[in-house]
Length: 344
Image 1: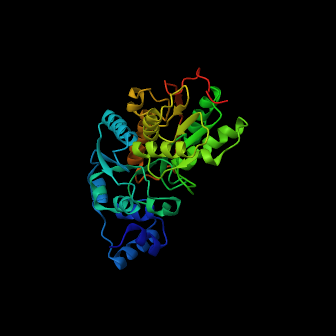
Image 2: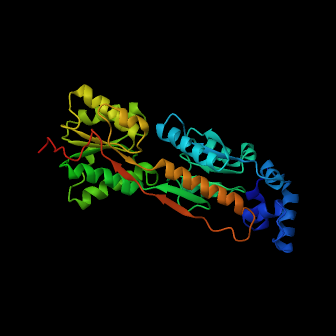
Image 3: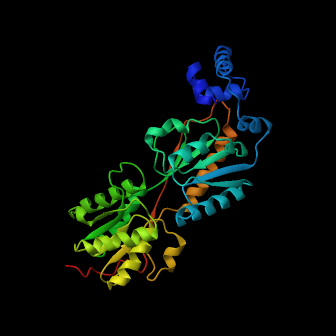
């Protein structure tokens, strides 16, 4: 089945121009409209239901696509998006992609989008090489760090600075042998790479040498992965007096293993996570963490998407915008600033 991108390529115009022709916007030049219509006829392109819905009026529904709600971060982000959308009298349809590239592409270009005025999209399987997949004919706002400088609005958190905040907090309490759990081997983009970069930057600024033996790689970021990563670190017989877990679920798993190993938290080992999920404050001990400010992320993302919906088809539709939400450090029992390292 021919797509908008196929028509755009054959006509030698942008996807947005094809969308404008399909939706009957008057400001398209007659010569351009003629080329697009000829390409549509040659390819047998059939406009999807998105265009029909938008011509008939907005549906009052937006979509949110996340890798999986089993991650506390995405479940709580979804809740924040629901709240922000409800304040604007919009309904939210939530999709899980499993973080698989094929599922993410199918969602972006599939028929389910016809039920929505626009989509908030947090990809995990797509990468910078897939930027063309974001060239769609409906309002789209990207969440997360998989694809920068794409053709859409983008709301990101301070992964690098947030990670540096965590490490500086540990350094300020006297820790010097800071392990990191959950790095992705060979990754150059994405949350893991950015947070590992912030970790290394904070060490360098403090004059603390980077020790590769303190980095534990794990593709998964669930509690079981954190528990196993901590077991691996202990098995290496390297000295460490602190742990920076690249998300809270890894940190919660690490706390369990530390407890069973007989190590005291924070006296022997301080632990800081990332995401500030609700469960972190109820752990024993409560987990210090980096708060990315999900409520603010959700509010900015929903507002940006509704602006795009309102601007759709207008000549002054602005260029893609980038938003970054500041992160903050939440000190708790697993890493209070006053506790000094037990390791010389």
